[in-house]
Length: 474
View 1 (cartoon, one colour):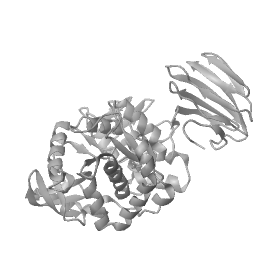
View 2 (cartoon, one colour; view 1 turned 90 degrees about the horizontal axis):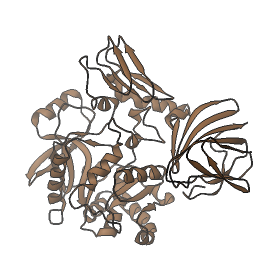
View 3 (spheres, one colour; view 1 turned 60 degrees about the horizontal axis):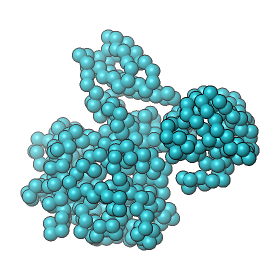
View 4 (cartoon, one colour; view 1 turned 30 degrees about the vertical axis):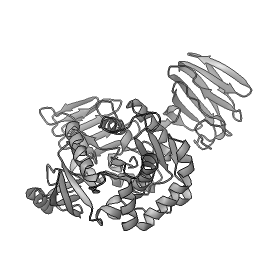
């Protein structure tokens, strides 16, 4: 499942480039790590005909997710949501896909794309125990309970009941507690953090969904029926019907089923798990110096202690600071007290209310064909750095209100400019007047990089008329 906006990790996580696509210090994204972790598990089918990694995500994140899947060296399919409706509808739709592809007794392992797991050996062992409890004959809906390392108030808890082989029957799901209650939970050693990871058969999940959340179950069935014929012939990507899906209740799998069913088990899991829910979690991934300062990027600390700096492309100097977090991106800077890390999401709320672009997009924007980065803009002009993937192509398009100058700095561009098709090499350029049909294409095996200078009275991204597009955009 890859749908969380990660608002507590602003300004790096944004609506157009959310938490699963954040790169960690080792250069890998959270979703790439999740793909690799899942693909290595015993029993996961990795064939061209029936790839068994399924990503449920928003339509807007399809191309980025597909790229991360390829980077991970895995194969898989995609169910694309037209809007977010929480985890119960997402998992319900995934269960229909699994049942159609592999049958009702096929086991599903449900993972979040934005979790980090340090001990993958222990994780594989926990999965093995969950499989034994979830398979036909046992028929449990299994959740992974993280062995708590501290009285954390930011997580829900699971209370263990009767002992089962490899786990426990669940007595209760408990909402996020206060600090005193959380300490009691940790002391009893019978409570676990609720990880949001699950294992069950597709048939059992659908059956329990009909039993405990029939409105959700029936709506998922209607959505799947619209897709059923297409699902028989298309393996790589299915788009869930918008009109049907947007009417499904917005509800989590915990509320819809787990808290209501008597067939729920928990497998205790000491696996080095983190949901990377705030900047404190990112900070803790970085090794500290002697003054407990940490840096991801280029930073200097002078007379500073307990300070974390993340900087993408410039030096940050911290002088005389204590207990501060500094997150620097090209267009937004966050300075925060770590004790208020959860409140970063309020910044995003204020930006949304003001309709400020900083909650939606970075200076660098990802597209199916590559990226563009806004270098500078002012009255009547905008400069971009454009990078086009090997073999990729922008749409055949036209702008009413702006002209464009393209200067190739690396690679070779194939350009449609009006009625002409041109080959533009490095250190060469072309001019595209307003109203001209044009297309940019990279037919080489190397990345194409160019600088685009826009001039005109209106430079918004919505000044575009697409005539042809290989990515299906209107």
